[in-house]
Amino acid sequence: MEEDTGALPLKDDFSRWYNEILWRAEIMDVRYPVKGLYVWYPHGFAIRKRAYQILRELLDRDHQETLFPLLVPENEFMKEAEHIRGFENEVYWVTHGGRNRLDVPLALRPTSETAIYPMYALWIRSHADLPLKLYQVVNTFRYETKHTRPLIRLREITSFKEAHTAHATWEEAERQVQAAVELYREFYRQLGIPVIVSRRPEWDKFPGADYTMAVDTVMPDGKTLQIGTVHHLGSNFSKTYDITYEDANGEQQYVHQTCYGISERSIAALISVHGDDRGLVLPPAAAPLEAVIVPILIGKRGQEVLAAAEALLCDLQDAGYRVHLDTRDIRPGAKYYYWELRGVPVRLEIGPRDIDAGAVVAVTRLGGRTTIGRGKVVEGVRSVLDRFADEIRTRADQEMARRIRIVDSMEEAAEAVRSGVAVLSWCGSPGCAGSIEETTDASILGSGSRSPHITLADQPCIVCGEPGTTTLIARTY
Ligand code: 5CA
Image (cartoon, rainbow, N blue to C red; front, side, top):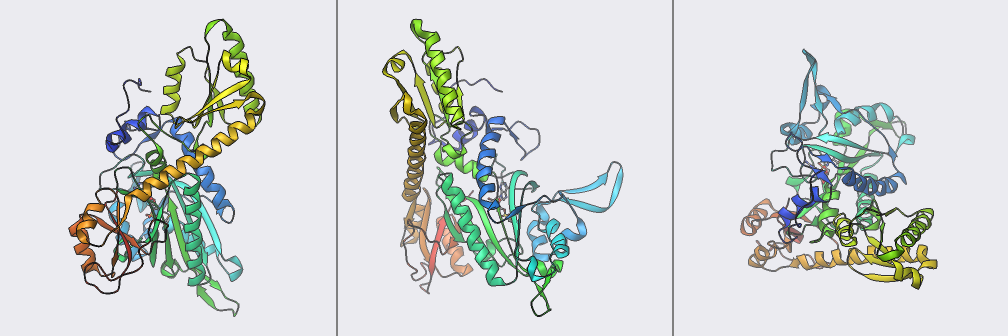
């Protein structure tokens, strides 16, 4: 790992800050010699593990986890016309086994519909098999031609969580779309990441879907990042892959499907939304270490302090905390700097004076200081962590609110998208979308958002004056 020298660039210089924090806080190493592929440092992977554990727990309530092969035969891949059109320029192909050319070329999955649905056709027989709700966490491959960026636009997505559901009716699938949106809202709520949900315009929906709901967050540079999507697939894929069930009257019916995905963009958002000039700021739920103990070893009482710190470590570990005691032979200040950069939510300081006072000092990653009585340390640390989680969630919400602006002219919209999201009314026509996108130099994110920050009621379209719906405009990643 590289020598940690010099300071992190200020977060205002977001692009540089992002690139530097990735290696300084030991999240990703970008030196792997293939474009768009990156390596997780153990610390980054530990954050990913915690975040994905939250996601898994939410899914496991009413989904089952599964695992499908990475390779998809060309004939299966090529079945659904719209899906192919959407992905064909992004697919990596395996054409050889050793020196032999394969009879059937194999696609590296860019997503797994074409791997999973032929099996759904075998598994689903009757209405008793429905609904079917499976998910997997896998790597997927997309030959992205836009600028690649660690955790944000990858050619190997290493942490692709994809869920695939099948239902008896279109309406039931629609209810699943709503349930999945709520699941993603809850996932991001637990990470303290504010989101906006909207319905993508027709031209931006998932290839093969009836419609797409997207979850976006606003990054520190004011651009939005799509951090999850939920697609209503209708019976488009079931007709292609012949996924049918026998209904109560003994007739064969096509199933109605949904799929929804989240990638390590969730980790990019976690880093970017909460981090500051000193480094990562992790919500306790996603922090590999919730607390670090720094003994203040000064003067003659060094041994006594160390013993007290070890006893504190034991008490907290016994209570189930993820906690570390930093006994390295370096100045306390250097330790503070080190753990702040890595985003540990709370540091516990214990020195001779604290021992005398029967106390421990807790300092949160944002600088909040609390003195906790030694006898109450287990409950005390819990309440410090809970308050800290609320504090960073509120801070992120306020920041997001500041970046969303309701506008009533194109000039104002062009101004608003320089620092965030413009909210206006749009009629839904591609023509008016074209003029909005050209004038603002930004994209239509989607329509129909409900959120405390987005209070505009549907009004006449800002371009043509026909009836419109509330629509979000932003510069996007
Ligand atoms: N089969 C569906 C649902 S799983 C699907 O593939 N949807 S997707 O194409 O919209 O991808 C799901 C999510 O993965 C996106 O919302 C986005 O957050 C993320 N994602 C897509 N492409 C990339 C990429 N190249 N790098 C990182 N994340 C990506």
